[in-house]
Image (cartoon, rainbow, N blue to C red; front, side):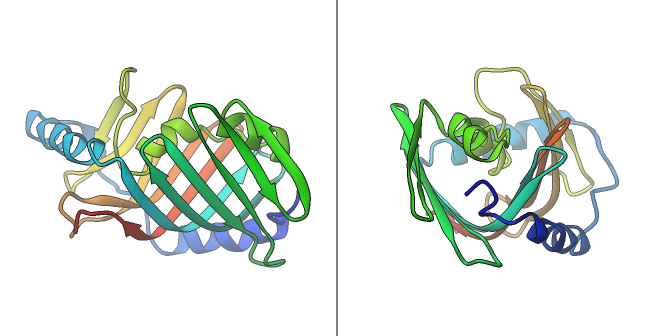
Length: 205
């Protein structure tokens, strides 16, 4: 079960994630205008409690990792993740909310914990800051805690540093209003989390 999302697949996925785009080259502290635009994005997107993404996911502890397809549905404080390994086709489902999280799938007994991050760490050894990631994948700062932003030439966030993690925004769906990320890489040595978002499911076009 620990290797359901097979280690061999992370190499292929990492290549796919890296090949399609290059990092934003210009990264500068935000101007007054950029920070105001970011605050406006956060107000609009932060107020939207129901959303979903479909795409690819990869995580590593620096020595072992896994990858697969990702379907993430968020309904207020309740969430449901489905991770499917590309080689075996097997999947696991993680669902929960403020009262805890439960991981099921691949014929195993359900694994329960106080939150999604604890369950993923116990099962796979990954450090995935799920609560923060729910904000970061939308290009938002997690509320109530300090954060440092830099911006790219496109006027959108290029990097975000918060809670000891460095988040790198490699690509955006800039045509959306407001724009939403396409490639999100988060790292805190030795851990990495990468999300390639192929489709956004929101009420905002």
